[in-house]
Length: 305
Image (cartoon, rainbow, N blue to C red; front, side, top):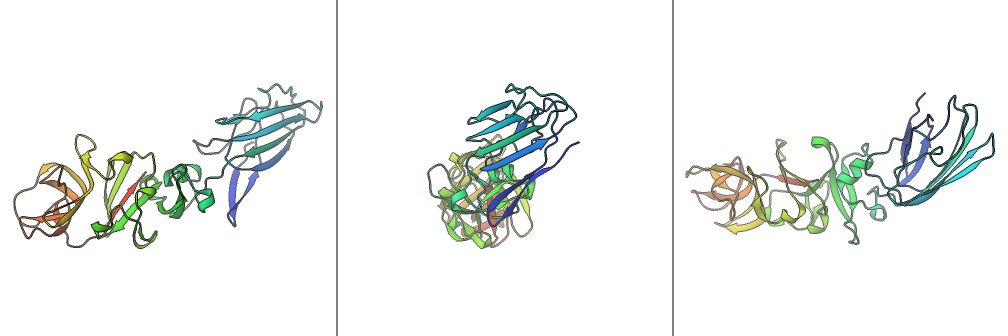
């Protein structure tokens, strides 16, 4: 029979509850946490390990597993090493017979990167979402390497979840700055809130939920450049014609008439765009466009993962 395992959070600490179904040739995935777990089982067939359930990408730092056959008193110690993903008593050499009773003591030690506070800051919202898919949308702490932890807003539900919101505002002058309170009204983070490794950017018109998602890398967040054969990303906040320019453009020219917003300056001028720009052929003032159509002041949200 198969059992379930789960983590419950209580006052920012973890309690591990687990009943393992133990079968021949099954291996246990490890989890980044400090715990002491003792299992005593009497299987109907040879015991070698347990069913895991931890998300992909989890790496344990240190620890050990003590496998003891209570019937024969044989004991095997398995040392956990960085990068190790499972343990298996029989692979380690423990002799087990179908009627033997086995005791497994698991001592796992490593950082718990939950993002619930500054001391447990994770690498990104995506990393948190992969480790803890049940975590809800909200404010978490992230940190890149040795940099201080910062608060960010994580969208854990939209389009697969794991989105780290960099900006939510109708004012392009705030782009690239830390302002407001994440999750409340309008807010944003500076470059310290950008994950080191990202592959996607999502640009959303908050009022309607309409969005475009494009490929991107962290080094292009504040540039104006092509991201593939179809789209350009403009994160330069370039100031021209009395407008600041941030958003996504494609390769389709905009007709020269009033009511249109140019988003792509300086690298992809006069193409259809979504985001902040200038109101071309009209009054050359700040514009907010969606498919280049002038919307008037509009809240946009920029998130990455």
